[in-house]
Image (cartoon, rainbow, N blue to C red; front, side, top):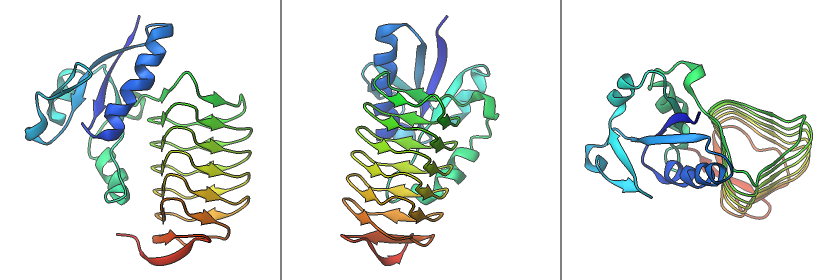
Length: 217
């Protein structure tokens, strides 16, 4: 029987999460999407691909057995992802993980709860992806890399082997991270950056090679 799921909030990540759900359901009906949840009354009743915004988080109280994929976050709000997700007050067991059927995951990789892996992502040998993470399409995460909780990884990113990405980071689309480099907690790596040395926590780093330009917001 398909598992019932609600998506939070009605942003780009949650709307795009419909694509791997539809792709999985095309092979075998895995998910029954009840709708989106969003605290902004202005979007209530709107829809994406026929799936409507049901209302605010109070709606979840009427669906106690429904799984939730909570995927807030963009370059401006990524530092608040943990706060936003925890504010839902959900038991850990209610969080779903959505993996597009095209994703390649090594049998010895570890993937946490409330994770969204979009099309054509590669998760190689010995990789760990923590809880509440997002990885957008066409990204490769190579051997023994660790991605910390609440981190967002953009599309077309190449993360080499043995990299350590701390919790609550944002890795911009098209960026490259050299093997064995550490990107510490709360850092933002800009679009197309080439990271060849360790990046301190709570900063914004951009360019080729990536350099710190300011503190993260």
